[in-house]
Each structure stands twice: as structure tokens, then as C-alpha cells.
Length: 168
Image (cartoon, rainbow, N blue to C red; front, side, top):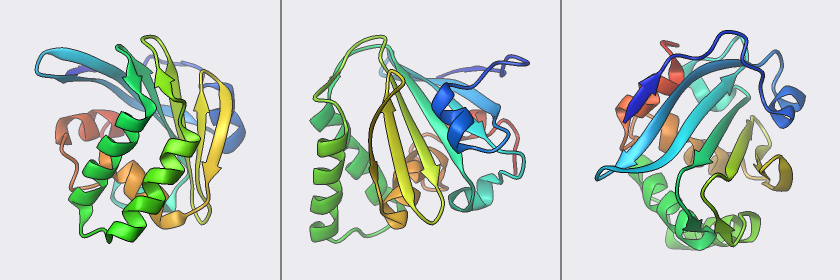
């Protein structure tokens, strides 16, 4: 994993500026798996953001893909990681898998950007290369989905810390 400090004054994507009040770049990191670079990640948060209570705050997670993937594979991997936070009944996992597969593009190409915006009390909105993909209106889904990166049970605690940028 490669870590880097946020650039001062870096402007957020348009969707972030519309959905997160006074957004700032909290942190960034690169995910690599077995030496293969997967994506660069950036976390955009509002001024009151707290990592310990991330699900109670609006924020946006931006992933810039460094290799291609099928949308169905991203959905399946997301569910596998979401299960790290605790038991997930199969019926609920099936609903979430279907919602992700319906919302995500069929394919993510190298250079594509996916942006997920956590909207407390509502769910998650998704964008592909700046264009709206849709929204999954389910607060539990949104908390578990973004917990893949920000939750205490994440499989990548170094990435979590880098994205949080020292936010408690």
C-alpha cells in the first residue's frame, strides 16, 4: 500500500461538493494486492467527520481504478468484506448483491473512477466517471459497505488510517 498526504487545496469532484457540506480531502492511499496495484482511494469528509462514528457523517469515497474489473466481481468482493463486520443473513446478502450489481457498471476499466457518497439516514449514492449510477436507499447497507474501508473490522487497517488522515 502506498500512502500520500492530501494536496492542499485539492478540489473535490462535483458530486462531493453537492452532497457533502464543506468537503475536504481527509486522506488518500493506494491499494495493492500481491504487488498488483488495484486502485487509488481518496476520502472526502465534512468538518465534523469522526472515524469512530463514520456512519453518522456524510462523506465520499473515491476509487480510481488502476486495472479493470467486472462489476459483478466488485459486488461479490464487497459482500465478502462486509461480512467481516459481523453475521450477514444470506437473504440480506442476496438483496445487497443484487442492488450492487444493478447499480454498478458491468465493467470498470483501468482509469475509471467510482465515487460512493454515504448519506446518513438515507443510504449510498454512486457515480461512475462523474455520472450518477444510482442510489441504494438502505442505511445498514451504506454503513456496512463503507465499513469495508472505514470500519474497525476492515481487512486493510493501514488504508483506513491513511484515508482518515489522523481523524479520530
